[in-house]
Amino acid sequence: MISTLPHGLHIAMAASEAVPYAKTGGLADVVGALAIELTKLGHQVTLLLPGYRTQATRESRQPTMRFSIALGGKTVDVSVEEEHVSVTGASHRLRVLFVRYDPYFDREGLYQQDHRDYPDNLNRFALFCRAILEVLQVLADVRGEKVDVLHVHDWQTALCPVYLKARPHEYKGLRHLKTLLTLHNLGYQGIFSGQQFVETGLPPALFSPGGVEFYGSINCLKGGIVFSDAVSTVSPTYAKEIMTAEFGCGLEGVLASRLDGVKGVTNGIDVTVWNPEHDPCLPTRYMATDLSGKHVCKRALQRELELPILEVPLLAVIGRLTSQKGFDLLIEVIPELMSLDIQVAVLGTGDRHLEQQFIAAKARYPNQIGLHLGFNEELAHRIEAGSDMLVMPSRYEPCGLSQLYSLRYGTVPIVRRTGGLADTVVPFRPSTVGSKSATGFHFTDATTESLLSTILLSLYVYKEQETWQSLINTGMNTDLSWERSAKLYVELYRGFWREKGDS
Ligand code: ADP
Image (cartoon, rainbow, N blue to C red; front, side, top):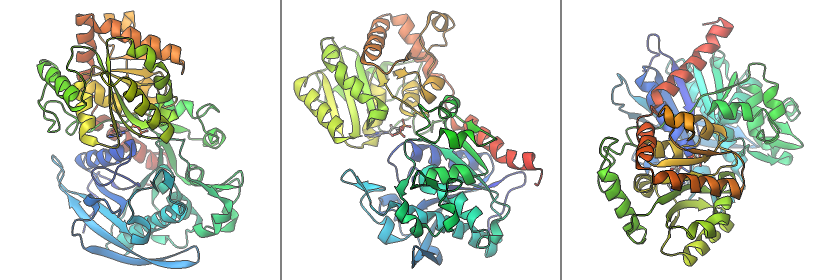
């Protein structure tokens, strides 16, 4: 039996993805790393994930729980597989529970296939949320384990606090449970037709402005914001931005109505996985005090991407190719950029239109653009290591991870001043250069002019060896570890009891 440690909390972390099991974006990095770091801090962590088809979720585990869930007029049989993961530096292991219902989760994609969302995503994740609560109930009733906090992430798990509050008679063993919802991206809210409401199994009264209804549709994220005990997001700047119509994606009013506000905790990165001194994905390793290996990585990357091996600045682009990321702005300035002596390495997947534009750009400038369309984690490491700069022209960016990896790999980030990009990259200015605190470049307007002039500025500074080295050094020595962020989350969890005085 697992019991809550002295002074420690038992935290259930529920999400639709987490490294190393399933990943489509930054959410997976955050959930996987936070679960490990909280374990290291001495807390008992139970990570709950859907049992997808992906390799890492299918290795000969035995089901340790089975139960039925009635949802949307049918009853389905769910099984739960269990794994215990050793965590270096922790006195106990991280428990990972996989919720299996193969008709929903044994599929090619996590949320979509061939660029189309699965039509039953509401049913899939409503079932997952119900199963999460059922698991916690079994832990409490059968194994005598009291989980203190349920930390849910994004719309896929946002219905957990809704079910918990709306069906208290079903979850009697979970009365003490506090819920925290972390918003990783307001652009994805889990909106479904109001006609599907009956399939959620929620009381009809909740299809109302005070519940999950939003302009006639179901909005899962909104439900989570209304019913969670606390809400946080992944950077202090984004926490402020989402209170405005420009960034709130329609939910700014709902967010503002929370009297306790929205806390901003900046993400860390897994500094053991993302470490140029020990990274097995790289052809050679390097460190801030000796960057010779970074030059080797650059030449190897040029070779891998079939670019000429030249001593020219190499600009990296990594991420989802969507308009959120502002890569359409980059496409527009490609002709100007290509008139300069530079190369661009692109790794991404996303909107078909943008993918096609990058394919066309590559065809036009084969000696200057290296392109890999698809998801390739190892190549992401090699691009972070082998490039000189990384460009993130995001229209909005809750936190952003690629710029953090860049800082760690001595690749200077050029970012739009928004959300976590504003919080994590110290902009090049006379004052920050003087104090040696600058780590990258900011631009404010989401325009091609601002983007281009900032890239040009970075290319100019690149030639100033001493200043460039200082940017690299400061970035590589920045503390980006999860420890700091995880401690802030623990503060949020403990705040439940401090505020309400019912510990
Ligand atoms: P978001 O979560 O909005 O997609 P983040 O910057 O927070 O953006 O996180 C993106 C993560 O996914 C980073 O770890 C980045 O390296 C990775 N990533 C994005 N696209 C790809 C890709 N095509 N191949 C490999 N890794 C990718």
